[in-house]
Image (cartoon, rainbow, N blue to C red):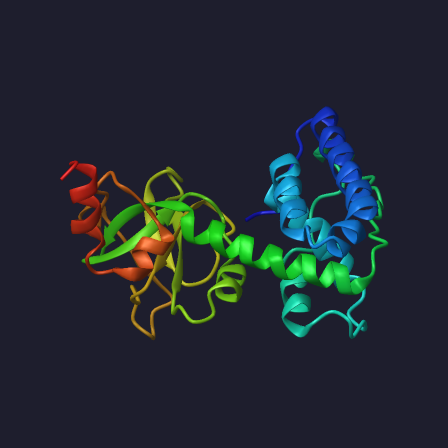
Length: 245
């Protein structure tokens, strides 16, 4: 779910810029027509297949976040837009000369609001179906990824699911070796992120050092939706699936 991307060469940046401009044009030309003919669902599927869910969400989020005063956008949609309204507009090679590029959607705000509500549902579905690596840490089952993920975004999409987020820092000698699990996002030596239904650290702990005996990876991938349903039985459930039983 990361929308801020680093571009190592201008060609990569230009390709994404062209895709975003094409996406902007297509939404402006087709959104009103799709809503009028009650084909918004089909239109969204087309946009996601062609441009990807992340870029469609960013494009719509940027538009809504630029007009926080507009009462035609619902409160929930505005909150969602704030989580989808940021992405890099220049390549690393242009870091000293950032380009101020504007994307504007001209469809009626009511149509854009409906588009955003359906995108929220799509993002929720994608999140629940996303697979993470199952990990047993401090004798509790959790999910692990080496990605930097947005805790705020997950909390927004799954407001009724209590979830704890922890961040893994690698050692100074070797960032690939786990050093500590921390409550706050790690900027230096970030190694991974843990999602857990149960707290892994005590209330007074900001971090805890970890060693090899504190971790166990069953070599099983598990989608977030399955983990939410049975967090404590995740290991048995995934092992049975992994062994083909």
